[in-house]
Amino acid sequence: MDKSDKHYALGLTVLFLAVGAFTASHHEMWRDEIQAWLLARDSTSIFNLFANLKYEGHPGLWHLCLMPLSRITHSPVMMQMLHLLITGVTVYLFVRYSPFNWFQKLLFCFGYFVIYEYAIVARNYALGLLLITVFCVLFKERYKRFISVGCVLFLLAHTSVHALIVTIAIGIALCCEYLVGGRFFESLNQEIEAIKNKRPIWIGFALIGIGIITAVLQLNPPPDTGFAVAWNFNFEVKRVNNIVKLISRAYFPVTIPTRSFWGSNILITSAFFQAIQVLLCYFLMLFSMLLFFKRPTALLTYLISTFGLLAFFYVKYHGSIRHHGFLFLTFLMCYWIYRDSPAISLGQTEQQDTDSTMHRVFNKAGTVLLTLLLICHAMGGITAVRMEHRHIFSYGKLTAEYIKSQGMQDHPIVADKDSAASTVVGYLPKRQVYYPRVSRLGSFIRWDKTRTAVSKARVIEAAKTLSVQTDKEVLIISNRTIGTKLREQHNLTSLVKFTGSTVRDEGFYLYLMPSP
Image 1 (cartoon, rainbow, N blue to C red):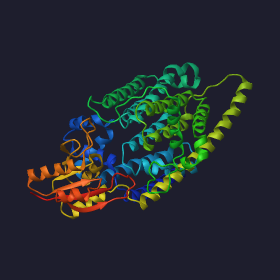
Image 2 (image 1 turned 30 degrees about the horizontal axis):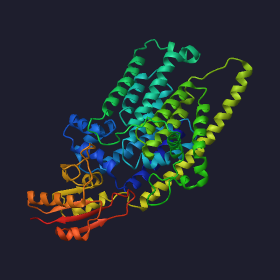
Image 3 (image 1 turned 180 degrees about the horizontal axis):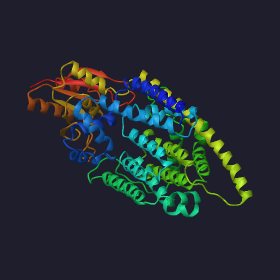
Image 4 (image 1 turned 45 degrees about the horizontal axis):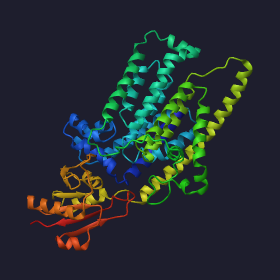
């Protein structure tokens, strides 16, 4: 690695962090971001945190990282800083150590998932991207540093359910390579035989297995879970094709430059693209399999990851663009580790020449395809950053700032709807508000079956009851307007409204219930 590569990596990382910091300063976090912060902030201990996490559907590594920060400050801005720093480290490692050319690295850094979805929107997925990158860096010397590989994959399994699927794929591929590959690949056999002490390898595999098992145990939902409870094992060709279409969303994330840019795709607006979308996705999978065919480790990782993710989207939870992004990350990861995977050799000279020619053709086509894909990602990333500056993502932050500016942060608060209003709570130094949908005090959302939709009249009754109990004015935070008749009937004062955000149901109306 020469100095110019190091300087290029540092320069791109600094530029990335500058753009990211400016964009993050304009980003108003929404409920899924704030939920993680509230869980870390308001859980009384690590054991209490894991008890609260059982409804989340994700392992708890990200929340564990946030817990110390939440003891330093009540402001979730600290979470944004940590999140951006994590992605900044990812960018540096990718640019310095990946086998791609300088232009592809530049496009990657400002692609949709890297500059926006996994940098600005502060979720657990950035940790997954970082650990996948670290794995790729370690892959070349994996058998010399297998305990490190095991530690990285142990942690990767605990970042998200999607990263867990990728971890399982990598674990199976590495296990097959180690146990079987040495019989077929002379270079690999020599590398393995040269390692006199095999204990670190078995320790590494043990770490991978323990990581997968403990992550699965965390993901086992309680009986009263109320989120994504259905399983769909019925085979339907139409549904299969709809799930396969997610590949195009992950590979071509070209966002529409409007207020509702998040999760949009400009290609879907084209009738021609819609007509070829399914065929294009199947072609991308077939091409990837042919591209990785000579390297079984990369091929097996790609197949298990891709089909595992698609199966999860099919039978359990369709997901959103941030989840679908792991389909592209899988492709990129396998492309990276491809050249350091053991290769199939066919033995006959004539066949080898033909094979070598096809190999060069596929490599050239793969380079062109990857560059085109990364250009699409950069277009989507630049558009998302522009729209983030131009539009309010969520009004949770501004609503909280208004409440604090009016000195009402210490008022008893009734919050409806709970999942939306929790965004406001995350920006307040308040640990408990009353959620009518679950008839209890709290801050973070518990996704159990007690959550039910409530009428506006019931919200007002809850506020009136709380007003009598506390002998104070009660602030009502709602993401729906309360009509004039109801306000006059209960003597409510309409304070302010914030509407027109990117996240449509995170505009808010504030009302004041007088003290009795």
